[in-house]
Length: 173
Image 1 (cartoon, rainbow, N blue to C red):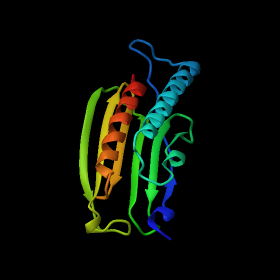
Image 2: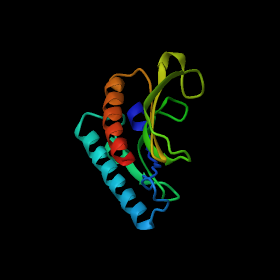
Image 3: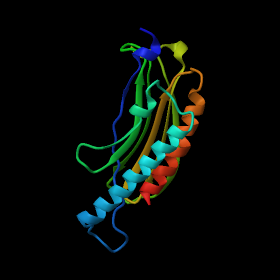
Image 4: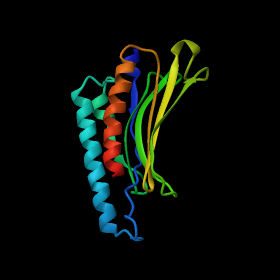
């Protein structure tokens, strides 16, 4: 079975919604539901925008790139996970937004690290994880990409990062 035939994709998500403005200590369930709906629509537009480009980390990206509600219904995630084989390289493109306790605003921050030498990654795969985080009100957006050195990956990371960060900014407002 070839790499593309063995490619499996899984999607998942978690986004928290903007909290009340200064002075207001309550949020009605209707307000939270409306904010969740707006963010879900925004992530759906980001998904469509990615599919209009050449973003294809897997053979079945249109099916695998999904926006799903979290188990508790509090959030959303835009993601695609790929695995060439059970013991092969696993890649991911994931945007999540989740609630946090502190009311702190912070700009986008970037971390990068190499991942090497386990069941899924060998040194020659040159696997890199890039994580962007931003906090606004009582929500934090986390954008994570884990990719190897294969052709097209840098472009896909750049596409996903640009489109997902714009969507996250809209969800955090």
